[in-house]
Length: 244
Image (cartoon, rainbow, N blue to C red; front, side):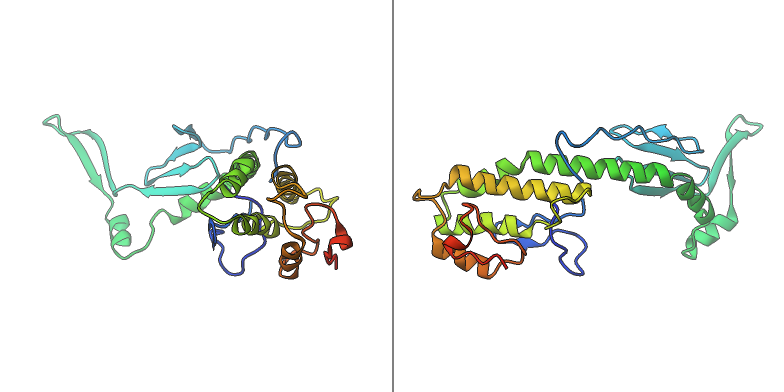
């Protein structure tokens, strides 16, 4: 599951490991009822065929291109051999493009110009597919967040203090946008933070044996990266939580 997370430096894979396995990182836009279904992508000016499992396929003389559901493209070059016509004996005749073969052996791509034209013709379609996949990933991440929180809090292998620390870490790793942001990814991050705090209020309520002790909250806030305090019980300065 992936949630909008703080940038992690030069690592662009978004798969940094945390104490409970893969950290929730992403580049990915939001969820729930606020998200409208993506518009049907506009058809590009080249002949595409629907691909089994989603996406599109384009077949050219020298290569095949597959556009995945998320807009990524994979090319598969053909051998420079063409079948056409029949010999006097009724067998198919094969033609061989020596120039293309020599370019392939030399490490050059004889179809580079054709591929560039294909990419230019499909750029809008691929962007729309990418945005739709981005939105769906975030929608799924939020849908599965409660299950993720349960897997942490109900794990009997860890002490309660370690589980509380993991819940805090998930909250602290989320993006911290302005409350009035209109960016879909940032709105998802706000919803994820609210979901985590709501889970703590429900399952680790104040005054219960599972609750965050005041000293633990103070220690977590002293090392948080967020500007906002980690204050699941909304005590503010009464509990010694530094809001600066």
